[in-house]
Amino acid sequence: MSDTEGEATPVVENTTGETTAAAEKMDVFEALQKVLKTSLIHDGLVRGLRQAVKALDRRQAHLCVLAGNVDEPNYVALVRALCDEHEVKLVKVPESKQLGEWVGLCKIDDEGNPRKVVGCGCAVVKDFGEDTEALQVLLEYLSARGKE
Image (cartoon, rainbow, N blue to C red; front, side, top):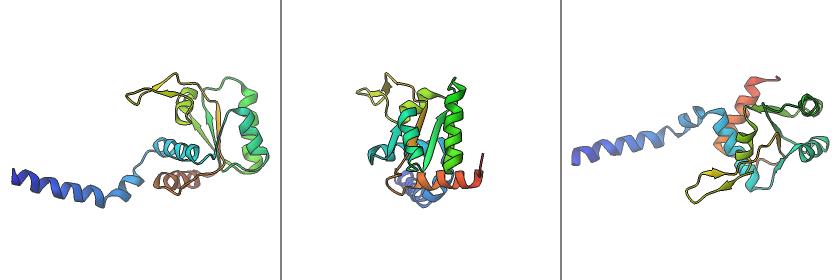
């Protein structure tokens, strides 16, 4: 047993030593999800088209997230035009239900699983809240991607 414990200890030290490497390997959507949760906790997130357009017009927005399965072309055109006009970064996610879950438009059951997820077509981050590793990963991705 002591041999097993000896092997387990270096593995734990390796994983703590590679936290920065894990942050760099963090998926962009995982980072986006954590940034949205942090922003929601710090009351810096607005959800829905009406609130998003207000935040974009007032130049309060730092980041805009748009669902990819929005059917209305005018909806997408309005959000894209406002983001371009005010130089706000725009990120697209594949599903509105997924975005709704990330921005808190769902119930969480006793086991921690989301239930009754409501779709969200657009969300805007007005305040990132804390400076986290996920935020740094997301900002690096956005700066590397440039203008879409």
